[in-house]
Image 1 (spheres, rainbow over the protein chains, first blue to last red):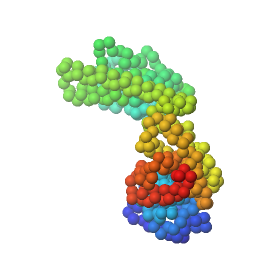
Image 2: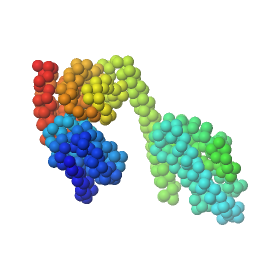
Image 3: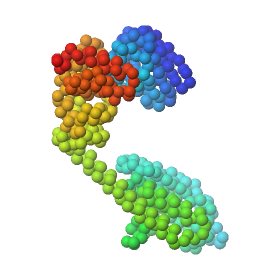
Length: 100
Length: 355
């Protein structure tokens, strides 16, 4: 599991790749820290290469969303695969995020 | 300018730092009290009369004042309210907060004859009591507190602008037109207050009906739906679903389901309650089928209501198209919603309620 963060103008883009499961969650939580402090940014969680997400991964997404709201930033989840999309529906997270 | 007026201006210069200190205390005291009393207002304003303005006043009627302390509006504070009822509430608050010089205070709202309209504002001449700040110098200075509504403020500001800018006497016809507007704004203020009171009564009645379970008598709209949600009607289902995986429940707003229920044909809260009763068990079974073989231990509080809507649509024969409409309503229209609908349909199709 890798997480790369890029800046593009007013956007902060987190590129997730691999399986965001419980084992990977600790490192991923560390990797996304720059997103938590972003002020008035558009934060893109780019999931094209993300194969799987567990509850731990959902919690990381949730913490990004909470901090973003507190700092005037907006979060967009982009390009999730159909399995992850189904996880978002089953858990009700689909109504928590703007998904593209 | 005569010598007496010049002496008063010198007194003004020497007292200015003290008056500036008073201004800060008065403003902070008012804001704090408004906050504590939960009164929402448009603005709290304070101003210290400028030296030029004071000189102008003294030029007109300087002999009227023995000393600067006779001029009660060197410091002026103004609270501008949304509603006319709040002027009275804040007046009561100010009476407790400050020492009021009743002899010099005036309620201009009550000065008009039955057939006249114009400037409406409540003016209190106040002092800071020792209970607010124990400072003999500050306690001694009087200041003016004006209380008025936003509409009264608009009228007074425009009237002041028109009256003072032109520098010539305004013909009677124009004065009459300005004062006619004061009458209209007085009616508008009363109407806004009445509307607020009626809405508050309506909300209380709805909450009572929700508490009493008389939901079929409550028309479905934004207000009533929010009252319904405050009773947490989907909590029991969410807890059952969460118990499947010992999941934590993440609270999310459910207001966006109002449009969904209206689209599903609900006209009253009772219709939603009926729909919930019919679908609750199968909504749980759907969640059990979806989540039971996963280790997902976090869900949002929208799961229960979402699954109820899914089950209702499927049991009414809405199929994939109905589910796509649901996801469009919840997530905004996008190309992924039909895919979601397909996946949800495939998951549900083997369940007993689909037979």
